Image (cartoon, rainbow, N blue to C red; front, side):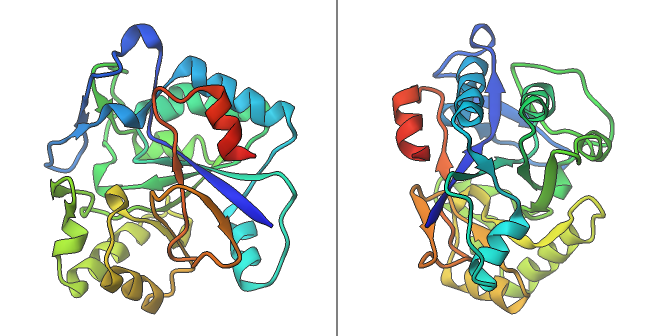
Length: 249
């Protein structure tokens, strides 16, 4: 028995986005970065993927079901998939939320609390703009929200993140700040920023009582997968349906 986790960041209509186009992020924290092209998916492909899951009887998992699977010996429905969205950009509300609601799907959004904007902003397809707490609260009938740090979703290189560089005390404090937000209900579930982590990071999460943590390593998760090193499949811009079917089973 296994389950697949899918990872989305940004959704765009094809006419609004070029496959080679990076997108500057616009977040509350004083941080500048670009979201790389592979982290986008076309709206057409996203709709087709969700329709496929619905028509083929997939069950969209909750975090409680996954915790029960690893810690209480519970089983999972035969066709199980976990839908995850990182960083909470505007397209999650504009495109993902109504689609998931249409099919009665459940999903998880990993929140960088220090990135959430104070005021709603007009949708800008040229930027990756974070939502507000209020906007995320309005989607809580579909999404549950988990920890993706408060101020530690930053990097100094493609393989060097702040979480890798900081001492464990500062990392622990940042995790606590994220969990202090009433929005973050799944306070024992984490996603590593940029998919980067060290053995020290994993040990810290365990010591702080985290039950699940997600990487960006592809593949399916079984009982033998360490629950603090769960696999997620990034769904890129160019993925065709044959590949998507192969990932989900």
